[in-house]
Image 1 (tube, rainbow, N blue to C red):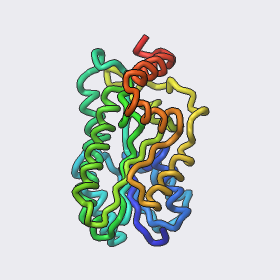
Image 2: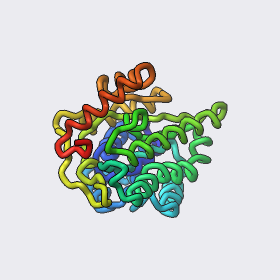
Image 3: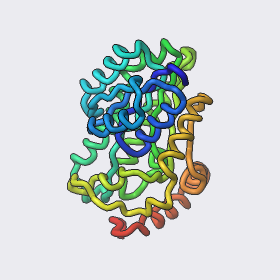
Image 4: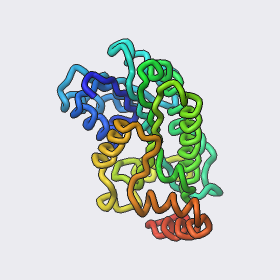
Length: 267
C-alpha cells in the first residue's frame, strides 16, 4: 500500500478510525472524512504524518462528498481506495418510529455512499482501484427493531453489487463488507423512535469483535480483491446461510435473539 491513496468516511471513531490506523501502518496516504474534524486532527497528530488529509464531511450532504473527493485529488493526484464507512443506526419498531428517522438513515448510510462513489468513480476506474461499502449483517437479514438500518444497508449492497456488474470489464474492484456486531460507539448514538440518540448501548460491547480486528479483515479483503466479506461465524456466515436455505427458521431465531436485548422494543 506504499503511496496508495485511501479515502475513509466516518474515520473519527470505531471501524473508520481503526481502518485509518491499519492503512497507515501499511504505508498508505490517507484522506479522512467525518463530521468531527477535531477528532480527525487528533488522529493525524497521533500518527504524526503529513500524508494525512482531514476533511470535515457530512456524507448526507452531496456538496461535502464532492469536496472530500476534490480535495483528495488536489493533494494526492489520484485515488486508489474509497471506503464508504460512515453510518448511523437506530432502534425502534417501525410502527412507533418517526418517519424522519428513516430519512436520516437513508441520507447518511445510503446516499452518503452514493454521493462519494459518484465523484470518486472516475478516479477509481483510472487506477483500477477498490470501491468498498461497509454494511452489516443487517444488510443481508432484516433485523427487527432496526428497520431503517436494515433498509439502508440492503440498499447499499444492491447499489454496489450493481456497480460491480456495470464495471465488470473496467478493472474496478468492488467489495461489500458485512461485519457482525462490532464494538464501537454506533449503538450509543443510534436514534430512538423520536430521532434522539438512545444513549447507552443495549449490548455487551466487550463480547463483540474489536474495531481493530474488523478493520484488519476489511483491509485484507481489499488487498485480495474479494467481492464480499462476511465477518463472524454465528452472527455472520451462519446467519446468511440460514437466510438462504431456512428463512422461516431464521425469522424466529432473529426475533428471539433481538428480543433478549435490554429494553427491547419487541417486548
